[in-house]
Structure formats: structure tokens, C-alpha cells
Image (cartoon, rainbow, N blue to C red; front, top):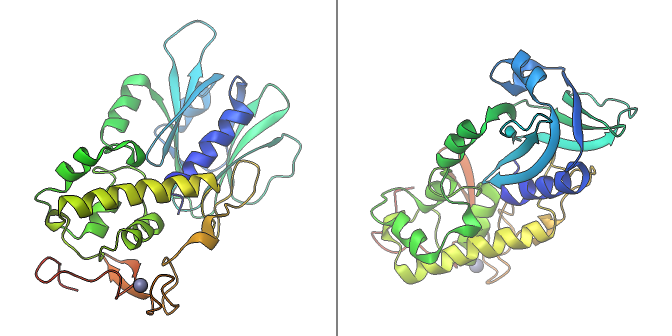
Length: 282
Ligand SMILES: [Zn+2]
């Protein structure tokens, strides 16, 4: 599932390939991936592509109309298996291509999504602001003080806390496991029990892991590709994620997996010990 580094890679690719271009036509081939009225989407997603913003895992494409009206936006969420590419219009359509945004220069932006959990949505500036304000701060932008304050009093396992997009936007299963390993914190440790020094370490580990993954265009496990159709290269750097049974790269103990709220957590039982009395049961 694409997390902040993969989404940021797509945002940068769109910025490089599509900013300044005009969307002159829209074809919705599967309405399920459109949030809101499909007809409005087809009629309104037009104009020159301006800024490309991102918060957490959501990309906002600014659309500027010729008549000088206020900008409007195309919001893109990749869900589990969403892919955005920019290709010449004559390229053969791959299966699961659900939306085509035709550009004036003979190319088009294609949205492909096998599992169809991703969503494209047309919205006004006010609607975009509301959507973005429901998300926590973008993970790399959070300060130590904000991070420590947000953990205070939270009686939820830190792994679940990291995945909650309303607290901290952009971190998903892969980078949460990697950051907890780097900071030597057990995934079931209650968020509010983490001491300030350990919290600072974790905040920095989150930022470091995300930045290194962005530098390698993210992690491709199955479906994620960048705008040119290339997989991310961070997978080889994963230290614990999906490495259960393999030796910990730090101490050699076998990496373990536990299931928390239906999702796998991978950790080293020796490097990420649970402090007595500070963890949830499990
Ligand atoms: Zn270890």
C-alpha cells in the first residue's frame, strides 16, 4: 500500500511531467474510483495544472481555469493499488485503467487501480482545506515538541498510533515497523508511556526512514510504480518489514511478527523489548 514516500514520488513525477499542461478531456471508465458525482468530475476536472501539493498520502492537483476563477482541485488517493502514469495517448490501455485525463500535448494522465480502493475527487479550495485539516501534521514536518505532546495520555499501542492518519499523516505499515525498529520500541508499547527521550528518537526515526525511502522512490512490494512505470528501490533497505524469521540486522535474533488490529507488525524481540507494565497485552 502506498505510503508517504511512494505518494511523494508520484507527486514529484506529476510535477515534472504534467505541471503547466492543460487537461482538455476526461474519460471515467470505472465510476467506483470517483468520489462524488461522476458527471461533475468529468465536466469540472479541466484547466491548467498548477501546484501539486501533498498531505500525508493525499495529492492535491491545482486546476486553474482560463476565466480567472478561484482554483479548484483534483484530489488523488492511491488506496491499496492505485497507479498514476503519464503516457502518450496512443499507448495501449492496460487492464484496470479507470480514469484518463487527456492533456493538450498528446499525452494523458492515467489512473489504474486493480483493487479500486483509491479515489479521485473533484473539490473546491474550501473542501480541500477541510479534507487536509482532518489529517494530522505531515509526518516529516512534525516537531519533537508536537510529537511528544501528541503522544501524551494515549492508551493505544504505538504501532496503531503511528498508523492513525488523524494524528500523523503519511505513515503506514511498512515505515511504522521500520521506524519502531530504528528507535528500538516494541510495537505494543502504549503511546502515552513513551518517555520524551525515546519519543524524540522515534520522531527522528520516522523522519529519517521516510526521507531515505523518498530518496529511493519508495518501496515496491507488488503494485506500486512511479509516474514512469518504474518500481521504487527501497525494498532492499527494509530491516524488519516482512522479514519474519530472518536474523535481525543489528543483533541476529529472529525477527518476529505479531498481528495488531488485523495488520502485521514486524519487530526484533531482542532490540525492541517491552518495558514492564508499559505495553498493551498481546
Ligand atoms: Zn535485534
